[in-house]
Structure formats: C-alpha cells, structure tokens
Amino acid sequence: MAELKIPHRDILSLNLEPIKILVQSILLDNALADHEQKFQLIIDFPRESNDPRELSEIPEVRLWFVRLDAVFPWFPFLLDWKSGELGRYAAMLVPHQFHRTEGIQYNPEALEIFVMGKVFCLSEVLPEFDIQPQSRVKAIAQLLGYDLDDEFLNSITA
Image (cartoon, rainbow, N blue to C red):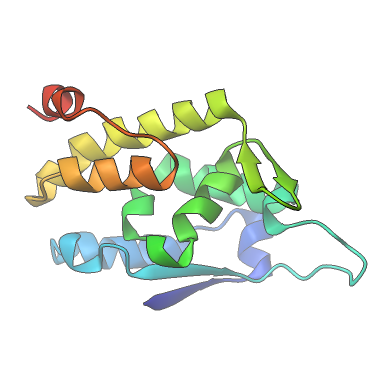
C-alpha cells in the first residue's frame, strides 16, 4: 500500500495536485489495473485537542473530497478497501452519524445514490482500461452493504 499525503494547505485551497500527478502517471502508463486498491489517503488536518470531530465532520475536508470525487469519480478504485479507505471515502461524501455501538450509520438513500453512482461510473471507465468491471463493481457495492444482481450488472456493462 502506498500513502498519499494531503497537507492541510491543500485541503484549505482545494488543491488536487498530488492526486492529479498520480492519476496522470497512471493514465500515461495505461496502468490502472496495476494500481487497483493500492492507496491510502493521509489527511493532515490539525485540530485542537478538545475538537471531538472526525475528519468527515470537518467541512473543509469534506469539500476537498467533494472536489476529488467530481474530478476523478472513479478514484475509489485506487483506494485500499481492505484498510477501510472505501468506507472513509464514502463517509466524506455521504451524510452519516456515528453510533458508539454500531459504528458509522449512513443515510440509506444517500448511500444508495453514492453506490449506484460509483457502479455506473466504474462500469463505464474500467473497460476503457481492459478491466472487466462486474466483479470490482460488485465488491464495492458489497463493502458498502449492497448486493447487486448479476443480470443488472450485465445489462449496464454490455
């Protein structure tokens, strides 16, 4: 796994340059498949010691992620899902609440819209890199609590 450090100043200025450099390199080499689930975003956003907020509750951090998702909507494909990066990415974009016993609870309708947006996006983008999207798209949906029907997946990737 590789770490991508996003400094405080980039968050505040909505600068995506570290991500753009990475993506350009990957796309230039036509190596999207080689970087699948390889990256972790390290967000440097200092807080006061008495600030109880999670990063996903900080408006400036969430706004940076909104911009990232708008510019590179397929970026979750590159994140290390096993280490929780997909869930954290979703938390930045999907309204949610934290529960002490149950963990993160996403707004169900917002999560469904987010998941289906990623399903449609990845189903279009991955074949451009000779990557079969069905299993990857299904895995992303399952990690976020959705089971997708194979017939549905086949109909959008045909």
